[in-house]
Length: 334
Image (cartoon, rainbow, N blue to C red):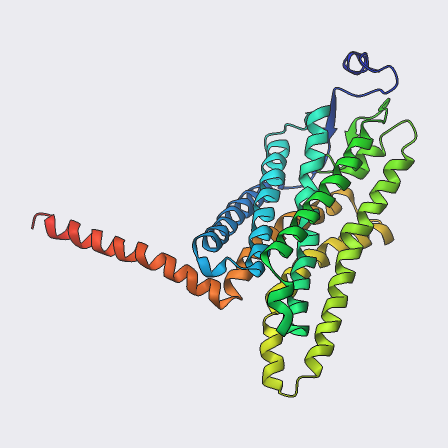
């Protein structure tokens, strides 16, 4: 044990806590700096796109509905999640600050994937909204109220906070006597607890529980709601009515596919085949960063009411610019 580890463990005779961890991801990746520049671009577009969507929903009163409460929550999660994840990743690898103190590592471990977990259950709440709208249209305004949606969203946030805090808290009961090199691109839960030299069985159980309730249960519930929606639509006589009802689900279905397919496929591939660490890390990085980039684009381009509202909000700005340009032209000397 080095002197830093000894000093860090003086306050607790039971657990050996290192002063720092070392994040080893993206080692020996050729031209990795281009990937970091790409991530910087992804973050800027994600910030602008989600910021615009949040502003439109906030400013346009017709969007103050239960459905757009969920969309607002999704955009807010995407903005916060990208901010918690990408800048720190760039600081770690682009500026080679790979050492991270123990407490900061636990904090990073919590926030890096916390918002992704909340998004998983937000998509379930969106599916519930579409399920009620199509299967029980006459009861929609009684069942999908602002109060009901707010309660669901608060429950999702509280549930994920409890789950994530419990998992990270269990790291604090581990001793790290040997290696402090985390084989990942952030303070990832699995690679971190596997470094422990004492019993980490509780951490393993918590990791499996998180996979079950974050990656497995939500897509199962979403698929079940769409099976019910498909059955309800099959009973509609007119094909035109079926198509119109189905089109209200397309934005949500695309967002679900963009979020869950890369997440599930990456984890399945890791379990059933041996891929290089860097390939896994790059795939995982894109899995965490691309959905927040695409979500506001999908909801802006696939939803006509959002597009028209953006045009209406931009029109006064264009008109004021034209007016200002005419004034400048009229006063300029000839």
